Image 1 (cartoon, helix red, strand yellow):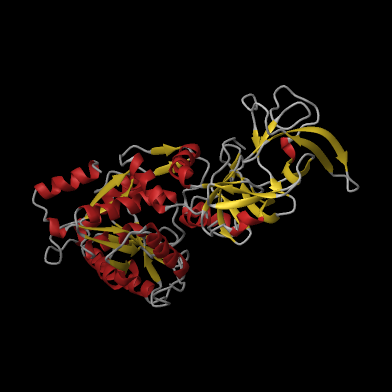
Image 2 (cartoon, rainbow, N blue to C red):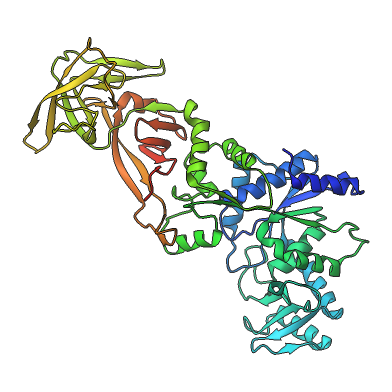
Length: 499
């Protein structure tokens, strides 16, 4: 793989940057789970470490105890392992809270920071700032009473990042430091400084941080100490991966969880890594998808169908085709005399018997020229067996339709236009499939709360005995599913049609 990021790093090497000093990091905030959008950042950082044969850290930027917890930390670690990536070290921004505090004190002493009160009063006297900042640290004030801001008014062109908050009061237990701290650094202040502390050479981030780059460099320049690290980290931005009809925002995912629209982060309607693991995705296929779309500074907008088709093409030749019936209607084969086994591709067997079930939608009483499945005028193939045609219909005492058919072993099959799935009535096994539609409706403005449904399906018992957990299967004319737990399938892809 060759892209502008590698070219820029090689250019730095050609200008004298030592290759052995290269170091990368993937630095998630442990305030949510990883999703498909994160995979782009994960891959490029780990790939660069491998490409240049150097180190990479997995660093948790844990600067906000209100939203972070150990569950998200462990979940991210497990996701990285599932993807097959290896890091040299796990680090935490909270490891550097003491160092970051001392750096902030130096910023105050050097007249680069000031205090702002809750009523917007600004304090520029250095002694007063140091006094208040220390009292903020030891918990003598309430949340939001004061903040420490960087004094950047005349230095940075982007008004979005002028005078950014460096520290705020948050009196809440931190999952690692407990109640040691009453103030916490903001992401803008802690992120670049942690890169510098860890001697990260190139800090890769998505394009929305481009406007923050002047601030990133301004902070680094103000804490720079060449006795500690002569090299400053360099921020390089690349485009986000955006996929239609799904969610690539930790904040929105957390809203769905909080509102109980989803039970957990492995909900199959999502594109979280938890969900992709649950649905039986192969991590190599996901990484290949990221590689295929490449790295540029232009936003990458992918439709969900493009993603689905790519993954489908990767698995279709490796996925076993099986038959299942969701809404069964009974068929009696008049000229069938003895049950027997049909062997499928030398891998498993199924039973064919006089009474079988087919899908209710595969039979039509009134002939329609656009309907090519079973009727009183149409021949239709039974998958793995002979053609049949209906000749009589009865209603049993329970009000259920029973279709009587003849088997045609020697008919010319060239003109038969349809093949249908079936299951023996005496060898059926009840199971469930989890089916879903898009979680968004109305142009991605509303959540579709009824988009996940559990449906009963029947399959052959012998087939059931050959199922393997966490394997993908293709139900004939229904879709691709993963056998995720006993008696339970989960659909892998969205439907092609829109909802």
